[in-house]
Amino acid sequence: MARPVTITLTHDLGKAEAKDRLQKGFDQIKNALSGGKFVKFEEVWTEDGVQFRAKGLGQNITGHIECWDQYVQIEATLPGILARLAETIAGQVEKKGQLLLEKK
Image 1 (spheres, rainbow, N blue to C red):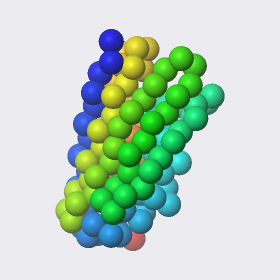
Image 2 (cartoon, rainbow, N blue to C red):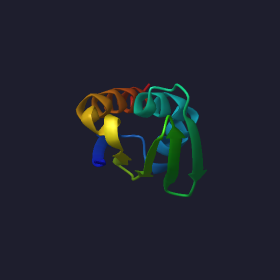
Image 3 (cartoon, rainbow, N blue to C red):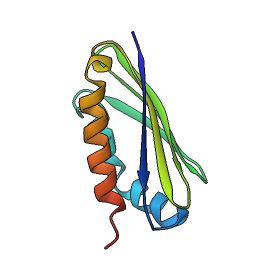
């Protein structure tokens, strides 16, 4: 059974800078969501973020990331086996996302 996961990351970067950093580091988010092996990602970037879909090993992940002035919201639907690991996956995505959004 699929399980939705929502992660909210706060930042002080402004919308444009947050989106730019996420776009440059999106591979890290993709790997945290899927484990990075045998998975094909499709992504479409918009003014506010990205819509994505991943397919691999009979599993499909769908979701989107929306950037706002003070936070970023990541929503993904994890299927089957990945749904059982939702908390672990969410923790990894949150960690990678927060690192990308740290003020430097």
